[in-house]
Image 1 (cartoon, rainbow, N blue to C red):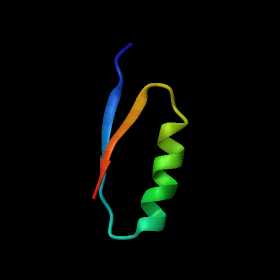
Image 2: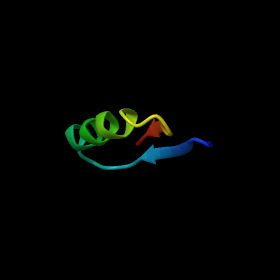
Image 3: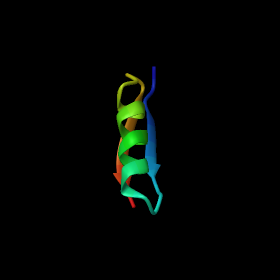
Image 4: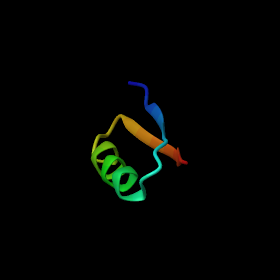
Length: 35
């Protein structure tokens, strides 16, 4: 199985943190950066 790499982009840090926590809980998704 391959890993999906995700770049999070949003102007609200709290929203980015929430999305990061949700996405990193999945085994096949890797958050590779934020902006």
